[in-house]
Structures are given as structure tokens and as C-alpha cells.
Length: 281
Image (cartoon, rainbow, N blue to C red; front, side, top):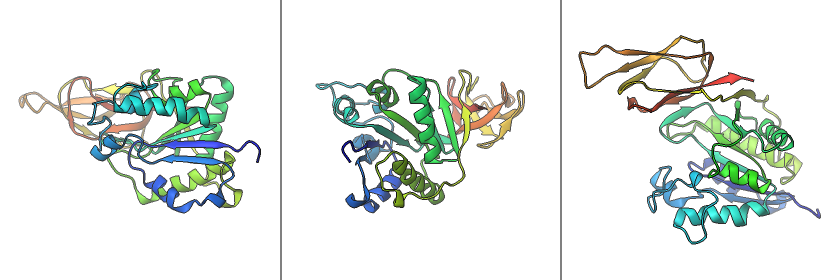
């Protein structure tokens, strides 16, 4: 192959599927170059936090980084200046962290142009997670998705479960999807690509998708991930735990939507996100 495809797979937390891939794929299985980083910001992974204990930075809010910056800035700089320019595709695997539960989804950022958006959607179809979410073109200039767009690299991301855990069934499905995607991207030989598992369901985030708590207290949800809610439908209750004479406050869906993200810790403060509703595409 005169122009082999090149894929970069950075990962921030909970890298079980990548650990499996590292130990399974052999050089003779490949038709391109595959770069896997199972713990891109190692200090943060060891601490099981989004921010590095070394410098207090969130890597996914630090791009494009700085050559002579602190540790996280230097990692972001290396990805921006060394890794992405050498890649044709990128896959950024997140598992939802520990503060929320997520529908297992591919995140597809719209843009930066119609052709690239089409390529990203095709990649999500190959990955074959249960859900795929269209997200606004950019969440800001300091994210990995923005860095990939700036480099002209086709990139999709995932949020896989949340709550600090993954299930074996989801790991199996993602592992198969990764192999299928790498075959589609021309990096893995076709005989190592499993069959399609039945496609993905498309939804999208809107500007008003995230619902925040109006009061401090303890949140008791009555909805579940994947529920289809109608405007005004009760989602749960907030109990003001410091004012025991205050009644519980009902929380209602402000619009129709599918519960995509649900808060995990019951203790909430003003401005905390309770849940996120997505719209059908």
C-alpha cells in the first residue's frame, strides 16, 4: 500500500477495550498504522479524575497546549503538533466518568464542513454503538474534537456508561465495533472485522438539552436512561436536606426528549446538571 491509513486512538479513562486490542491485534493483521494511547493523561487516570493532580488541568480543555507549559499543556501540544498531523482518523474513547450515567453512545461533532460530517457519521455507523449523538460543531477551541477538526482529521468520540464502570457486554460490543471501524478505515485486514450488529439509533443535543437543579438538596430521579419524556412529565424530586420543614421540589421535563445523561451523586448544588434530554433525528 503506497499510502497506508493512519489512526490515532487516544483514551482518557477506563481503557479495557484498548487493553484487549493491544493484546489481540498483531502487526500482520494491519494494513496501515495504528497508534493506541490507553492512558493519554496518566496522572489523571491514576487518580481517576478528569483533572491531573500534577497541575489541576483537564486535558480535554487544554488544546492546543504549549511546548513549554505544564505537564498537561505539553501532552496537549504533543497531540496537536505531533500525533494529529500524522493521522488520517482518530477515535477518542471516554466512558462517562463517575459523576453521571450515560447512554452508551458515539459522539459525532457536526462540521467543520458537510463532507467531514458525512465521514464522521459513517464512522459512527461502523462503530455500531446502541446510540449515536449529533453534537454542536464545537464545544470550544480547547477540546480534542476542535484540535482534530483543525488538523483535518476525521474524529468521533464515545461516552460509554458512566458511574465509574463498564459492563462486559458493552466492552464486547465496543471491541467488535472497533475492529469493524478499523476495517472500514483501511487499517485492519477485512477478515478481522466482525459483522454488523444491527446499526445505531441517531439522536441530537440541542442548546436546551441539559437541565440544571433550581435548589440545593438531594436528587431522587424517577426516570431512567433511554426513557422518552414528554414536556411537563415529572422526572424526580429534590429534597432540601438542610431545611427539613421545606417540602420536596418536583422536577419536570421542560420539553420532550430522550434521557441521555443522568446525574449519579444525589447531592446537588445550584447549577449542577440533573439530566440531559436529546431529540430524535
